[in-house]
Image (cartoon, rainbow, N blue to C red; front, side):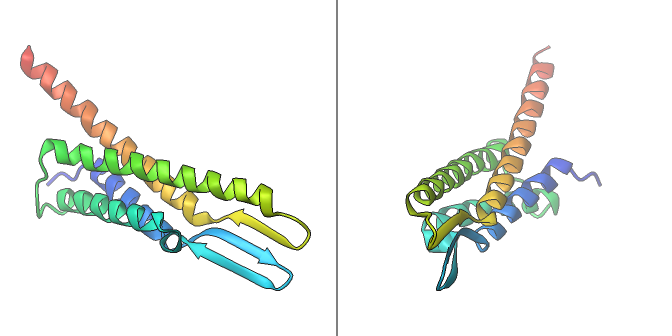
Length: 146
């Protein structure tokens, strides 16, 4: 029984997107202490969490053979979900960076947290696997035409 390594990449990408939502997306430090805010506290984390779970389930369904998503679902879910999550991570990271320039002084500092990076890496893995599936489907279709 052959397992497709691209399904593993999809699962890892989805899992990283899920885990990244629970890690800090922003850190705030002041003379009074510090605070971290994860993706679920930002609001956008709920979107990337749902997308990550969907991507993880598509990869797991294929890898463990308990469902066979259609060809379109096989690459469209990781591709669209990955692109959307990457845009959200980039936008939120840019927003935090812009706020950092406005807030940072001797008393208060803010930094982008690791959670955004983890969501971004998961999104890139999901996109890469989806593009690999799409490339394989196009090659198979061109072989059938010959």
